[in-house]
Length: 578
Image (cartoon, rainbow, N blue to C red; front, top):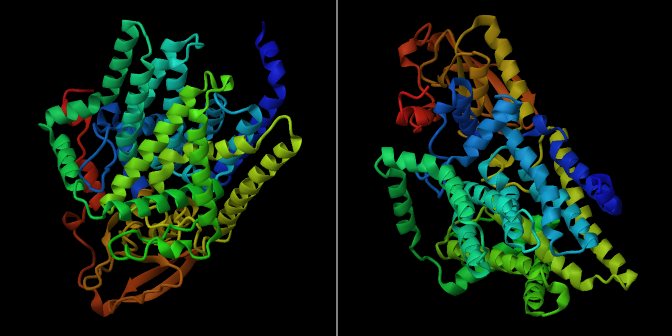
């Protein structure tokens, strides 16, 4: 039978899914390069990986991005190696490095559909995939480069390949198990949330399923896992267990309990509910509200007062949890072959909730990115409610399910439209998903703003070729340093008000409306606005000038450059590598 004959019975399913995927692609790629977030974390990752792109793969690091709330402890380098492949394929620039996240965000849409089709009907699977594709939360995290952003795709790939590898009806079980081993090794190196949560889910699931594979398959899977983790092993061997010691210290510090069980449960239930609501509807009722010792006594009570979406989110979470347990308890023939899916979802829900509970016990501040690990789970749980309402025999019920889903879809589309409009008008207004962790300083610094500002600085530099001195927010400084370096512009140090040099171009970059007057040694020469940012060009007063130019041997090495130079690479571990 030809492939066309096999696909013919599913032509409407394929057509609708294609439309959904294309819409998801549109939301993720619309002005992707112009509006892409490229800030302090992105510049660090890009410059670090660029060393491998420009000087050879031996300059790639043995460890990954910093994690666990410190600047020393690191997981594995899987994200950096994937970013390296992205940069080699699409270009060694911010957009080329970010293509990894964009593609994984796009590929997660059809993968989500295939994953949930192992349980849900075509009708419900298409509706849930449409929600998944339009989610403001997922669209936001799919439009810039950051290691946690690829979690949804790799978690789906891990669980999907695991389900197929244990299925008795699967003809290529060995292949799927090897793909699972690869994905599992990668996902546990992306973020500590996944590192602590995914392994117990997998171990328990495999223990009870007890899949039978040939010895060579087990050996191959083990080899794949060890190869992915080999850079970490080499690093610890060469540094005498330095990173492992950081890990042990972090664990010992994390054991302290600040909140009692009731308080922790209250915080966890609230945050879990509201973040799930954000993922599902795009409505943010929690971000920006700190969950820490300062306001623990009145949080979360103030969030629930008169708030529609938190209450709706709580109802959805309670009902979906009930229907999950209800489905597991049923013994209908229709669930034969679907129980593996249900048990995996149950373990996913259980261990995620327990993990967030442990964070609440230690009074760890929750950030939106923490919930990238459960994003697909949110839509699946919602699907259990729709499944209960749906009935192929009653078209009125299906119409109701369709309009319920459409309402959530519309909320997300409206949220995306609002964010896009704010970009279009110059980012002069705060964004709905704004948090310290995702969008620093109330306004997101987009790539197009950066390139326009740097073009202005370059135009001034080309007139005299004097070194550039900057004064800006801490998290913006590495961004402009990165761009200036790409243009070959000499960048020296932040502005020192008491010691101006005659040969210097001085710029102050700040959020519009928060002007800072020049110090006593400078006068304002020019002011230009770039959306939410304003750039002032200062010139030193003649009487304040102490020297004509700054000696080269006094040039300050940027902090980010020093940190990158200290990263342990394959070349440092094995100097003879080409």
